Length: 153
Image (cartoon, rainbow, N blue to C red; front, side):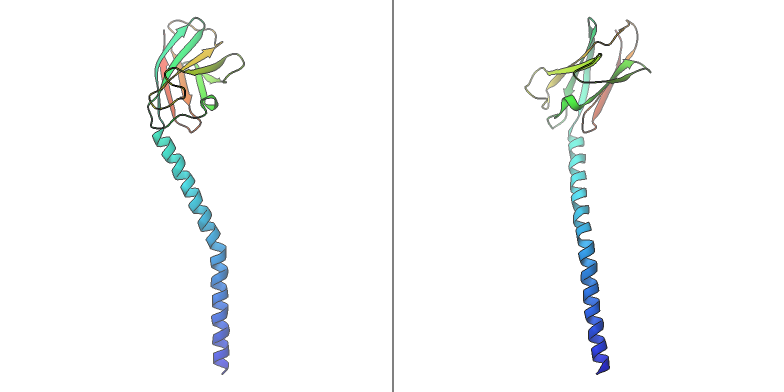
């Protein structure tokens, strides 16, 4: 009879332990699954996003860059992008919208920066712009997709 009671207690203790382990591990499995789903979504977005700086020019004291959306998704939050510009080897981040220098943008052939649309980016107030000097420009979108160009005039 003692063996039956001990066996019953051991079975009950094993079931309670198994439930405790399950209840502590299951939420972590769910959180891990959510993290993987979010990461997969970000990777998918980066793979479907792509831009290309197609031309750079000087207009008076301003620099103009044309960047084309060659990806499969609309670019969101262009004003939250990073723009780096300056002479080769001596460039800096240029802020959006205010200060000197700063940059602004306008979508030229659409209302949003959708696939196949081109954005004209104007760098205002960067001085001096020297003829024959090689310049570097790089655009980094909020999702990390980037393109750069070296140019001179």
